[in-house]
Image (tube, rainbow, N blue to C red):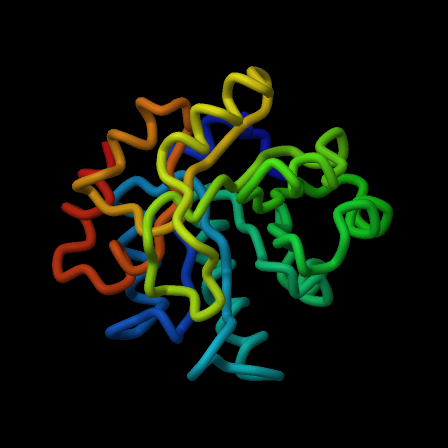
Length: 209
């Protein structure tokens, strides 16, 4: 388990699977790690994604990079990969494995939960999670099933209601709008295509200010 404080690791949270990349995902993560990402989530999901042994093998290669750079490694819902990939944490959506079940199975791992509206907040066991993924803040093309953008107002609302809850903004975040998400109250920003499809990965990561 990583010893990095949760608020620090959320600052520049890179999410990626092979389906999000314009080149080798291993090379992309290596470049992003060198550029200063603070956490990584392996999200191999959606059209064109890998499965089975190929998915596991890619996960191992990406995990090794995170080990080398001391970057916390999360997986996206696919909890059967948590142990083989020695994940530090698991991120789940509202329609994924319930947080209570994940916490029972993995009492020592970090758990992140997506929150998009007040109803989800009311129905979620926030005492069982380590951070909230708030969004989609802006419209995003990285997820085919993405919900309607909620704007930075949702970040501000969550922060006021839960001042001690670590929050990372997600959804359509780019170097051009990252600052507005942080100013709204998020402790960090999560991003996919802004880095996985960037021509200059170092510049993209370092511009998430």
